[in-house]
Image (cartoon, rainbow, N blue to C red; front, side, top):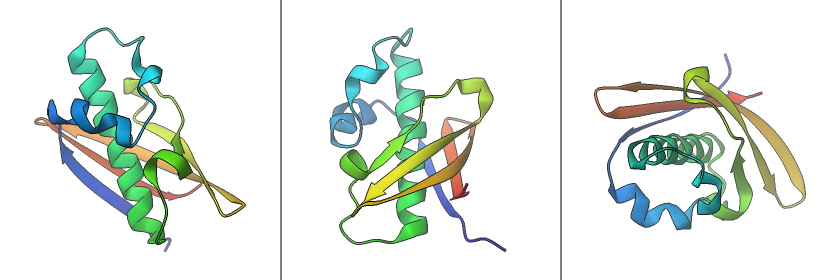
Length: 109
């Protein structure tokens, strides 16, 4: 009976305009096309949202405190590290994509 955080996002171009606010964009230069970038950014955004919802810590910043580890689309899971006020925590993330949406959920690793 562990608590989880969950987020569902529509995959859309708009994420390209806000990505710099939640992740370093240089990490995505190796992806083949815009569709792949949008998919990956949506997973990362959903991962960070699900962690934020799980933790509910005021002042926790997506860009500075939550780092989602790189992943392959087929893996359907990854991990993320949260560094906040000198404390480091690791979270297990799972995701699925369906009908233009991405669902990400997390729990303590």
